[in-house]
Image 1: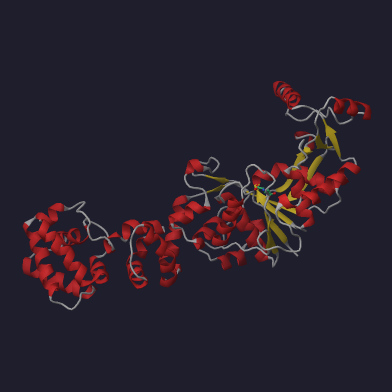
Image 2 (image 1 turned 90 degrees about the vertical axis):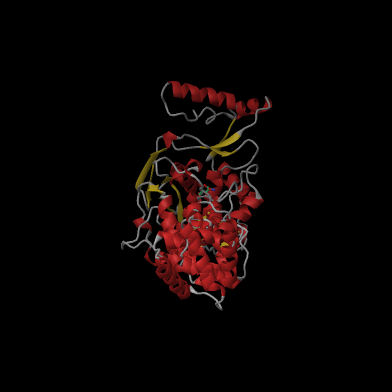
Length: 476
Ligand code: GLU
């Protein structure tokens, strides 16, 4: 049975890179009828915060990633928070001590820095010299008597090349001399990431480790630890890095990168899911607009490209507009859009919001666009921002007056009435096009472009239309 995990460190918001890792783990698990584990890697006590953990969980749920076991859910291999697994780690550190795979290193940070500088000066890769590797009991006692603290280092088999098959990268070969004997336990007794991740993945029976390419260089170290403890080595799949459009590594410099920021801007979770899945993977057919179910069905990990993925913000916006326009039913869209209306101070009842959305949804790329698009439906005391000339000209004023007169005594006004009335005015005053519609547009919205006027009038209704026209006729 396939078992995968997503293992974020709760040190900040869920960003696009991590969200994509979570997504691919989820999709892979679902495609294979497997299980997804959510494990919180909070060994960095200083930077880890419970608030971040809560937000990660919230963002993952919003995205539509679902896990079977995890911090908030429990499961057979609990606890799922590394800070609660200290005793388990101790047990395995003990095993490595017993088997002689790790040894005490007394070198001070200054000594190590000295070594590092020397290596760099001699153009050698900086790595630990192995100075404390073969200390005698005597020498150790002496160093400890000096009050020196120590770390535990892993005894790396000299010169060995670790070879593994990555499901995305293919055969990877890394010689251990590139890194040398690495630290397993820090001087304060806390175990490092490369060690705890192996213990957790092994004990949680993880079959496939799917994570970002930035961890590729950790993999040989982890494989050495698997071997030392006689654990079965899982399969690895390292996802390509994500670049911005300028081909440098995606970062805050490229604009918002946290899932939270996209959510706040009014991206729909379905579009986000779809867009993230396209970062490194592509469906067989040309159509890239795919539901979660379709992606899960079609997804194969081998199809992930072994090349950097470029994050195209404009494309995600476009995808989002497709979901707003076509994929959600109006009620669903309304429910999700209401917080945005409120955020911009646009208040109405559910039915009113729904009517407005029906008119403007085609013009929205993100729900934040509601601010500009929905404003003529809510704001009565707008100022005339542009096109003043259209309402000040003689014909303009006359158009507005006639329009006012013609709707005054009607029961109400819908889109067809609007068309009929403007036709009449066109005939009576012999004005058309711009000269006919601009005065009405500017009078009703304060702007020279925007929403279809017949729909605006239908939605705001007769009374508001009249009031707006009166106000303008009093000003000009
Ligand atoms: N906590 C690690 C990270 O956030 C997870 C690494 C892994 O998946 O092994 O990068």
